Length: 227
Image (cartoon, rainbow, N blue to C red; front, top):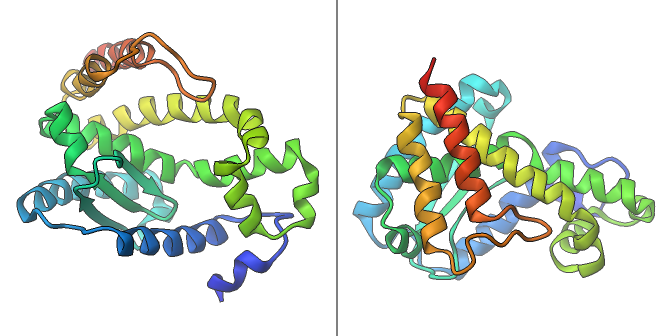
């Protein structure tokens, strides 16, 4: 029944509906790629993700019922993400380019996991409807497409997306710290990301700059180390 949800109006998108669509999109992405080719890398990612997901299930009880999935790809255009419902995809090329150790990989995964646990997709759709109520009369699947392709709507949502990136950074660091990783080592991910950037001081309308993210992570890590 959930797979029929996209044909309903977007008047009140709910998490189950967002998750059902995410599962369909995730399956499509996997079908388009060669996945899990490097068994050793895939095992490494899954071992780290397993610990983080266990912590997420404690912190966000509803996620215990999610059908979490973790896959890897060699796609150089992919970084990492976690779609609604816990659908994770990580690029080996990205991890190797930044030369991430296990602590830093944990931070990357925790950031993506927090996007899902904090319902960022759902909140983005809700924000879009507040800004453009006409979406109330259109199918959810059209709104889902528009938030990633309609430049006018994307511009309106930039502030929301910026705040969500900041939240995923900080809550992801806290999640991984609660799961057992040292906060200072986790923040090393942001240092490597900053150093790999061609424009480390440039913020986008929907994204804080790598320097900003690094400094914010340092501040949170310093606070956590006192506890």
